[in-house]
Length: 404
Image 1 (spheres, helix red, strand yellow):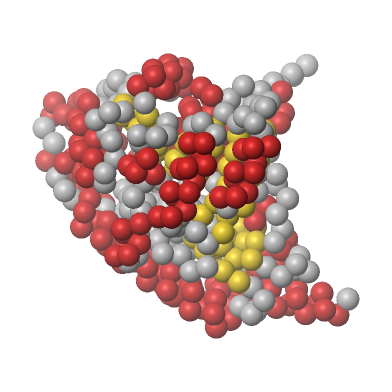
Image 2 (cartoon, rainbow, N blue to C red):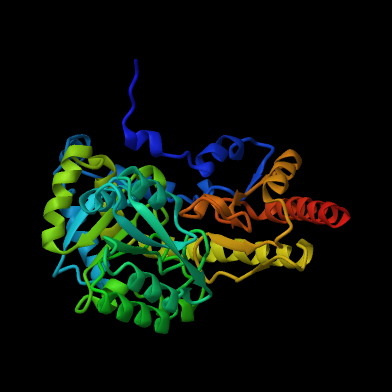
């Protein structure tokens, strides 16, 4: 008889992963996967980098590497993070197999079964899955246009005073799925609340380099760069959005005492992240090729965002509301209460367009009042038609509900 662990029995499938099979159909216009566009990858730059490597470095790329990361990449990444104001010198840096592994490792070293974790609501599905895999109990706190609601966060932490959460997990820069960019004042207020309650912060910053305007660029300073002196902050980032998900490279920047435990956990997971892609990522950073590439990405993603927003304004029912993102990949839309979002999704898929429903990102899996559109992987020639399809499905469902 097969007896699965209680951890595996408690896991729920990711609806995003379930939808990916549909999303790759050539006839489907996908707003589902939060992926870079294939046509945007720096293929030529990477070809040139590999061709210029010495034979010794190429051989090194094929070999196992240190658990904490390929040393030249650690050095060049440290310089890159310092240029963004991060305290890389006072913390330890580790390369991980995507930033989701960094989040997973941090969950593993802090969460015992039944421990509380506070997140935003909505929340990145990967973090929800990771924390659930260690049998953590998630408590979501709602977002507004400036970030997590401070009074609500303070109230939750007061309520949990007798048994405080192990940590608070936040995505301040171009949140997945909400697209929110925390204001400077909101980051300050959150830091004050976390300091008052002596809370550890895990700051996830996958999208911070993908800002669309100069004012947003000034705001995307990580909380770890601002509040290192008063808070214990574990900072995670990734190459997935600024180089390519297939590289499977992320990182964590954490205090030394946390780093030691994280290294032991990573050793037991995969021994080391891919040395081959670390070698390439190091040269991409060290050569400075990353900077013009990021400029191209920002321009393209802003164009796709603008087209998506224009189409939403033209075709969606007025009852659907949203906040226009200032960077990142996503638009988060609030639906009228009578609407059947599952029915809308099914109708849209039948007509040729797909999106992700809100409950995917709800720590309690209940939200049926939102949907997420990812414009990052949808080419400009398909955006308007895809939005029209979803709009038609929304209007048809609203008309049917009014007739009932």
